[in-house]
Length: 371
Image 1: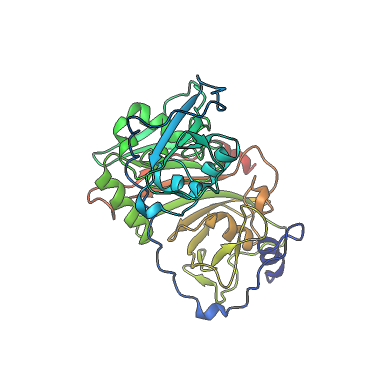
Image 2 (image 1 turned 90 degrees about the vertical axis):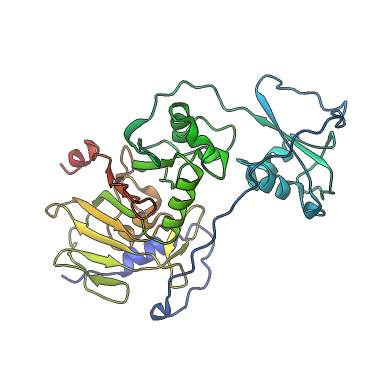
């Protein structure tokens, strides 16, 4: 039976409950790999608090003196005329522009001691200070260590845990757990909140994550990821329609690799709706090798090799094939206790010579989900 593409493609690329999608009419035959974007490099240090700085305005009592941290910087000449939230986002490590804006709107930003909105136009020499809610002091278990080498610490990320905190006041994430045991990781990265993580997994995804132990290892790993030279092997459980046929027929975006494996070359771009990605002719090149790891059935286990690292790549490519991941409600997956996607193996030998592939064993719920 011939597999129909219309359903899966339309499902992933559109959502009628959201705003209309942008036009998408480029010829897929003209797709070329996009140049790797240069990583954002925030300033390495926050300007010290200057002696004799103006005191806080009298109408700004600190309502939460015991659970806030104060982050400050002094505007440089190059910041002249820029918005305060923009300056804070690039001057203070671990604080994004979005977070700075939200805190300023909540009345937590002062400029030279006076409350200011996020749209305040900065002048050189002004002192910007954010009162940031401290992260909750939550006792958390240490990370499940897989391997520690001279360059990296490899640990298991449980499903449901962020790789690192997205906001300063978020609960402790995997990076915080790693930093307690390996303090050098916290100083290895370019952004303090990342704790030296050289890559991220979606919150619902489990599996191996690597943290750099030095700045040199961090930079080498990030460069290897940007050049698509890192080996990434995932496992997923998907639901399969009753008329599912494998392998799918080849076309411009599906190329056979073996009798049972195909390489999906469907480009990915922003989808319709918040946090969604979609197969789009105008998207970025994305390459995923897909191969079944078991007999056909209502649910099936799949092996995935990701040559590129686009956001939600494995999830969108499988859904586009008509094989949504179990528990992936965002892309049409069946409701489940977790997202059944697992980062099985990571190979950073292209970044640091002598590094060996590291494997995080498949969680027991994966074979159990197959029935």
